[in-house]
Image (cartoon, rainbow, N blue to C red; front, top):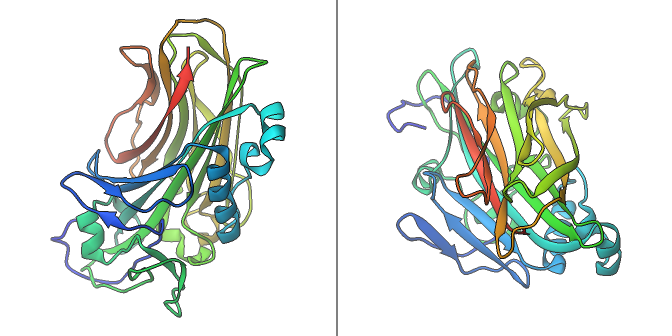
Length: 341
């Protein structure tokens, strides 16, 4: 948030990958490798801080999935990492790549708990607020539950007539390819914080019930890939199901869903907990020696504005993006290479 704001009360929750970070000007590299055949990059491309881990093998992504399941149940377990290699190749296709990306979000609320600003934090802002990406800590004992070094945990601040809340958003995805059917499958999970270190009763200030958020999966390929199937699911903290609606669809380029991040502002246990989406795309054409990208996009809105969300083909045909009015909103994008066409 803006440093000019005077102080009231706030909660700071922090967690991320256990890592040793070497900082540069706008992009940073991590020396820590969480698993074999994987690497992590910390970056401020786009004007906010993120930590992205690329998993180059099914075994490495399986280690990540196992750790995630041990720490917090995900919306679902991805088939490519839940089964052994021979079973997954037969049923879900060959592993292409897995990616996980985490960011940290600040939201400012007025005295009536209305969100008046929301933004993805830079590393300097995280440092100013005391947010550590080095460990997940028990907020009562401050004991490190995962990772090492760094403060983690919670603290309180005074910020004038407005209060601020902070949370972590993590997106992970895996892409597989079935040679027999010539289909790519893209599966992605979204998780808001960890329910074992942030209580549901604290989530009411971290989501809005009156505005739509968006999840999109788009891909390139110059029209050589056609969407065969799609599915999405998600839950609020009270374990009720989220209702997802179609926002935009382009069978050769992507699909976008819209939904309420929180179904009732006055029910904190009804804030979003997690979501999972999947699309299967089939190869229907061929252009030799070209590679397309898959983009996972999450758009968060915090004001009542029609964003006009639409899917837009990239100029070179290797990817498709989501176009929207960037007012009272922000987007988080994760890109995966490897679609050959």
